[in-house]
Length: 424
Image (cartoon, rainbow, N blue to C red; front, side, top):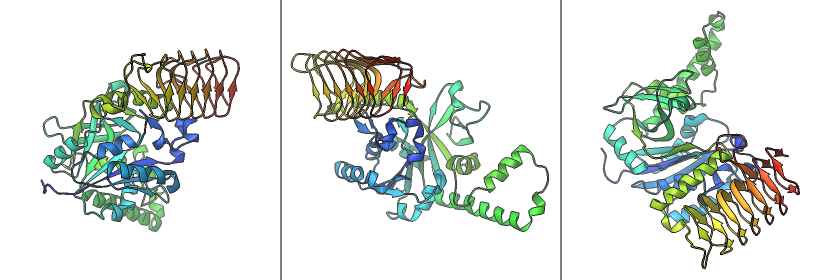
């Protein structure tokens, strides 16, 4: 079980600019991990969850973004949470396990007995202390956070089969073509430092295989099955490029090394702007338990009428006759005029929403303006291409203009109504 003062470190993978293409046009202005959900940067939610881990020594953010893009945030969050947060920039792609190994010396500086690994773009309640306790009880190398999903959607993720009594992972496969299990990998893990030996073994095996191919090329000049071809493709990867799912989790399944901890709370992946709006609402709802002081209230007398879960930045100015909510997040220096109605939306910094405007199922980009009596709306189908309306930075919607189920790139002025359009 280890002593009560065993140190723990957390590694959060934040990706890079080439990884956030599905998040455009919002990622044109800001790294995807810093996009605000429920008024806080996306990466803030897993970071603040890590704060609850006993004996946490350090949090590392690993990604391809330039260090200057994270410097200000890392400094402020370290001071706010009183936990050291450090950004580590990858020099080249190493894979989800390879990046961990690449920084092994830094990660092990505090001699941690346990290492959390989290993906930045997952949205959940992050039950990390409970997961750590289960992990110590299992006594394995790693524990995976899992969730039950519908059989129809399971194939989009890593599926696993676990022993119903011991919770040992018996079988793991990444995005299978046929249904395997309705239990999926949530992209949150805790490992012992033995994970580094497992990664090193994969890297060494791949290097040896490459050497054999160079020495005996004629041995490879024969017809091969599709399975062998897949194995060959894996061997052709650089030896220091190691994927956590295919290269580590799949081979370790059934060897009493991996176990599961199932979350009964919400879980989503944040791959698109539509899902960011859904996840903002999930985090706002969670604030009722974790951070009720961040939620606004008002009955329309001295301040705006607030319905449901709403976050309003202290610097935003909201007219008392406006009606806000549910699921609304309003960022710094935004202004909302008299009689405005906001439902299920994210309003970013320096936005002005003028009198009697309506915003529903939408994201309004930085410094944008929505004119009087205008409507910006969609149907709230989070996974659909035009399921929400998105206004990029500095979009000006003039008075009495209706924008429905559309995406508008930055620096555009709309003086006529549009529906189901992408305006470049």
